[in-house]
Image (cartoon, rainbow, N blue to C red):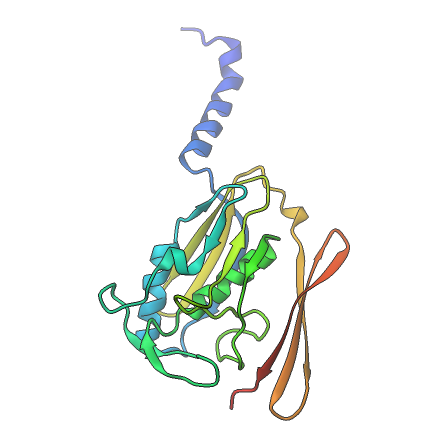
Length: 220
């Protein structure tokens, strides 16, 4: 049997199209990771639970992501454990303590992908696991992390949490232009023996803009 000549070059295209349809979000756009070794088992369990809820979230062009809306209330009934949280200048034990690691990495990936930040609330003091200026605190019913996919391509959030590491990626399709991604830099300066001022800038196409200016109390 003779295979038509046009079918010879159509087969690779067909295979490529099938692969794209099966996994349209195979292109890593940006990625951030943090060690969980310094966290206690309850904090790690809370992060793993919230990461499973967020994992696989697809944001079409124009769609907004809300951490509180997606993750929902952090309650015993929903599987969250009591663990230390960072609320203001206090460190109370609350259900869901520790998940700010996840919201902070989501914030960092959104920044690095050039997405529009709609809401982000910093902690009042420096954290053990997240660099100052790149953190995002969340509290159901009040403080939220929200960002919008204002690009022309859909993106998918990939969250993988193990006992030792949390990794968050934004995945896109093969048409995504990674060369157009912005660069993010931080500038920190001590105000006095107990305070740290951190500025975050995002540079896109040679134009640098101030993203945030946060004053932190230095944790002991």
